[in-house]
Structure formats: structure tokens, C-alpha cells
Image 1 (cartoon, rainbow, N blue to C red):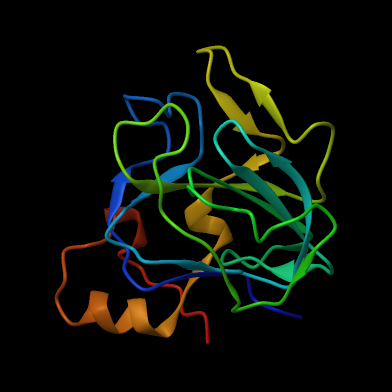
Image 2: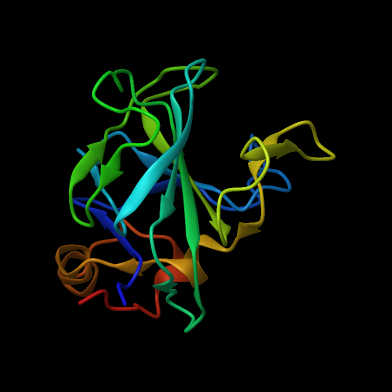
Length: 175
């Protein structure tokens, strides 16, 4: 069983879950544009692409291990990459494959990757509008409880970097 890993080269969280700006009632996080890429956290299939902000829903092909010990399918939604022409609905992406990049496509204030986790398989049209008017992934789940950190980020954090959210202070190792 694969562990679901937040596999980025740099972790600088610019907006937390339930943030005051555009994440009110949303369990998504934003990772700064200084991050160069996102690699697939698990082996999965693209279930939907919404081109207005280049939202991509990737569903795990099998159950995965969550950082909090949960074992279930996982859907991850990413937004704002400027060029997703290489991605198609039905495409299988292997764990660890670079597939998404920071961008400013859609209604944004700067270059970043918006990441949200849904527990279980892709459902409905992939998202719902919450009571504050923000769009959230269906079956949203706490990102910090869902995703392990990759080893390179762990080294960066343990090496004294301040580029991580306080909720990740108890590092969950991915490998």
C-alpha cells in the first residue's frame, strides 16, 4: 500500500486551512510559487479537469495510507497551474511523477499551488460551494492528517528552515 506523500521541493504554506482570505470553511492549503513542482502523492487516475483555473482531480487507484493511519482511497485537487495541456481525464499518473506546477490561472493574487484532499473516491462533480461562497473538494479532509512529507522536505525542516506551517511541526515521514 502506497503512503500518500506531499512531494514538493519546497514547502512554504502561504494560506492555511480555514484561512481568512479565500479558505474560510475550506481545508485546502496554498503552497508558494517558490515551490517548483508537485509530484503525484500516489498512483492515480485523473477524474476531472476544470479549465477556468486548471483544477485537476487525481483519485488513487487503490487505497492509500494517510499520515494519520487511515487507509482509504484519496482524491487530491490542485488548482492554478498555467499549462496543463499534458494532462487528460482518464490519464494514469504514477506516484512520484512530476505533474503539476505553481501558476496564477484563475482568480488568484499570486503564483501558487492550491491543494485540497478528499477522503475516498471522486464523487459528484468533484466539489461543492460552501456557506462562505468558496468551492471545496467533496469529502474534504485535513491535509495535514492526510499527506506525509517527502524526505527532502523533512531534511529542510529539520535543518532549521522556517518554511513550513506550524501544523507540520510533528513531521510525518513519507519514506
